[in-house]
Length: 212
Image (tube, helix red, strand yellow):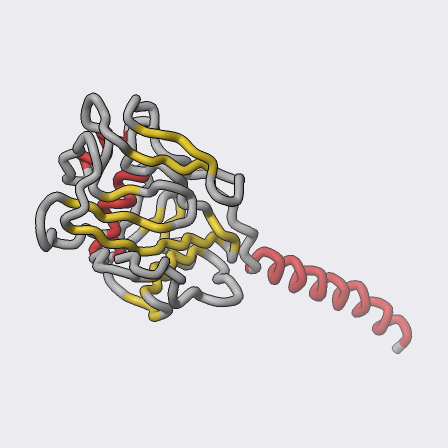
């Protein structure tokens, strides 16, 4: 009996080790945090998104929404200057109020320098500005096209639902379908969540008083 027990001990240890390795293989590795800067060809991408850039701001139709992007619970910045030719003579660069980023203000440019859909600073606020009264809302996919980041019903940039969990929320409610089709009406809080979600899904944004 003592001999039989000694033979089964290594076998049991081998099974425990195999199970441990299998569980380790099943646990997903942390996702690589992406860097998605403002693109170098903002006006070209604005046209690709379906907009005709202008040389100044027009505020006949003027709305704001807020975008958050998370990868494994960590915030991915939405950069300043999406939809703005920040190198144009008519664009003024200033530090943000906290001094940690850049804010781009558009005066009058010598040529087209601004898409109606853009970001001035890295606070995640997406500005929709048009010279057309009651302009039909732009779509989230158009903004991501301007950003140069893929967004469709399968993928967000290099992350795809075939091997990574992806969820999109509007005002704290999970939505289905193609997120590129989400209309940017006004004062929406949109959260694109890739991989492990943050501790809390944002459901609103504190827009400035009187900000449309």
